[in-house]
Amino acid sequence: MGNKLDYQIAKEYLNKLPREQKMEIINGTLGQVTVSKKEKQQIRKFCSDYIKDKIQKGKI
Image (cartoon, rainbow, N blue to C red; front, side, top):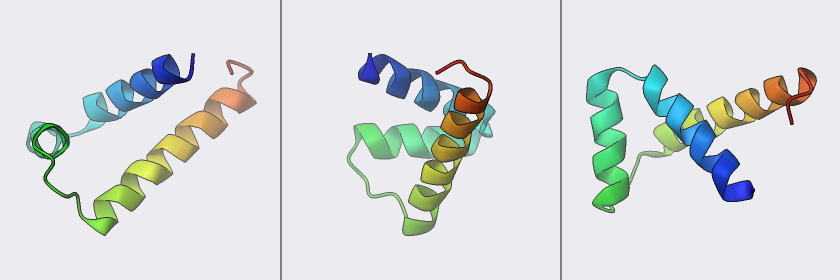
């Protein structure tokens, strides 16, 4: 179940990004290009906020 949730969070995060930024992250992930520390922090914050929101709404 954990992988399914991770996939859903990542998918929703990517869908909210502008196309250029989305492509950078996808290429970085698939091409093993490093993502900046600032971008990693933004991704973590989004995921944390997303999970907290789902928990508060009783969906997780």
